[in-house]
Image (cartoon, rainbow, N blue to C red):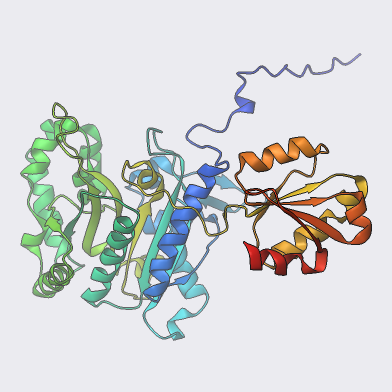
Length: 442
């Protein structure tokens, strides 16, 4: 007789009943915090002429292998990939920009009036080391301007991201900006950087030695403390810029100055993804040193981006397209002490509490709720409760100004009792006149 497989008992600590490492559930107020930020950021973007776009969470793996670059940590260590039953290789998106570029060409946006400007929001996935403010499923708000090489587009992206962060209450933020040049002058800088690091190979980490072979600019992304002295004395990219790139960078800085946006040039900032050209920037928060005087003040990056004129050619092999974009790390933003907690517009404090007291009343309750919903009058209720005293207690706890009572008699007469919770006065009103009464008296 064949033995049946034993199914192991689930224990309270069993991983099956826990979310995957670095991922979490958003429930109630946690969800509303993200939604509130998104609505605010989208409102700013809309006023500047951006339109929404939503791309699939899953894309072809090759889209990221080509665009982000095989020498980057994102591709070599952090991407979540899978193989479908049909044999396709897909990846959970580790960032927004390549999918939006893919959508631009797939939907023939070249024929649209240029530039095309998009905003988007949602989860992205990287198999990174989880820590405070850094998750394996995290959330970004994204901005892209496609179809222009003008420096004002770079400045516009920086200004909008800076504005969003200021308007949600963040203080002590500033822009760190650099230029890494284009295809003409970046090769010169790469050679200088490579020659410099080759003289110090014994003094840098193993990752930097490997990066130097695959993508030299990535050595400037290194956070290993042993590499910092070498990185601090490395050649600066702006010293190698061609005249056109110098002019572009100067114009970006002049726009920032005209908008009174504080910035500093950070020569180590390269945004080491293969498709970036010219402008690279981050918006950082610098903690007040008086808060923890014994700790080293380390700026925290909340947003970043830059120009990526090279991405279209990397993806297609021939098509050219100038573009610039940025992403805001929403998880980090919401953790900041000065963040103003924004409630989404859909969340409104209830003006009435609806009480029903019989089976007939419960059957008629949806008619009352629908009447109020269509009139945009927010309400609270507890349809599962039967007791008048329990439901009144819930109404008092929520401090609503009016209570609607629907009992068996009222259900038969198509009426409700409206009680003013301040003075305990009551009126009987026909259901079809309920919304009109409340709008007049609330």
